[in-house]
Image (cartoon, rainbow, N blue to C red; front, side, top):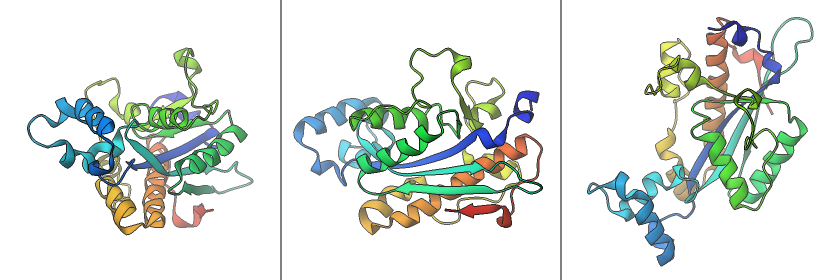
Length: 240
């Protein structure tokens, strides 16, 4: 891996993962105008395989216009004092997206110089958050506001992009990348396809937050592996 990654100050990186669900529990709850917009938006993806009703619970959560954020898990390495490492994990979660994003904004604005790091973050997590901030009538936190910035002024890291090594067509899931690098799998409970069910049917936000935190921890472990450093053990992980 590049010397730039080895020289990166890990305490300047904010590791992040988000969990999203459909804006409403079912397609039937959308008003007719929103139903038509959903049908138009997803026509090419659905083709003849799914009706709009069938497709909504499966995919509405990944489209920022039709979904919402229910959890954001954050992780940071504390600046070392003496020997050892400490990685702190914190989750912001809830069914009220506006309040969740306001709480997240406070955290991000306290540390505007953080470099954000996510897996597939440049294609999903970061733009999704930006869209939902604006939809909720909120200003973008400085670290997410990249409009008009030159590429070298954008402090975003993406572990999937790092793993591509310039191969633009290559997609590798967090789970696969963790496995190939010898990192314990984070997927020991639910997976992303089940988050909507856990939210809308089970109403178990803590379970979603636990799942999201595991992904954020795995993200940090992947970056450590890419730097050819030892992964964290449980004694080095602190949950807030």
